Image (cartoon, rainbow, N blue to C red; front, side, top):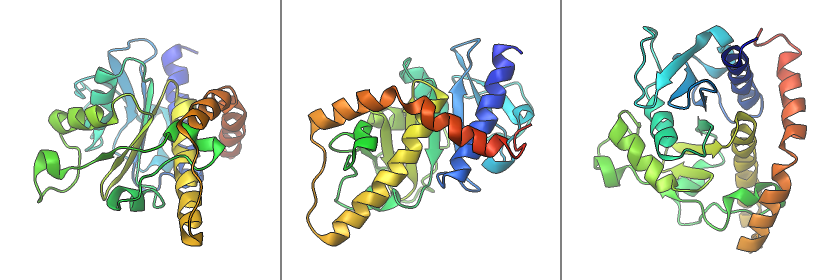
Length: 237
């Protein structure tokens, strides 16, 4: 099996893992940099994530153009512009997971409150579409200009929120980007629950760095069980 063939299967499985974990539903998407050409990325055609199969994966250039005639996602520019601006990123997840949204529209920042989400640090940046497209946009990243603006707000971070829309998580691998997406949603749930109890403690910046480094070596453990849960049903084969 070629690297590209394996990548297509991996990406199809990643879609299903994210659905199973409540990060994606009918919407949202996950991509990966082409292992055979870093100037390209892989992303499914315009399809609900749970239905994505290896043969549904399209190859895009970093300008988010392709020779594939199939219809792509409207927000593919999120992926292309992040890959163009972040050589260290090899996978991108865009989701609308519900527990994250409140932190994109309130003054309370999403930040690491437990050790599994240390990668969030002390404050997660929020992309404000009004700063780039006025106050009457559809909030969709529908071109390269908006994708580049989002990439700049993400900067060197692992996650960026999108006001009234969702979030983007990146990683050095598909496994890491998926893991970060899952624990961003779970951390948001924990923080919301703690906020309802009154005052609460967050991780310090140093604790966030230390826990992120520690967890980086444990991602495979979670990924293997998550992937086995979706592939045991023959979901992506």
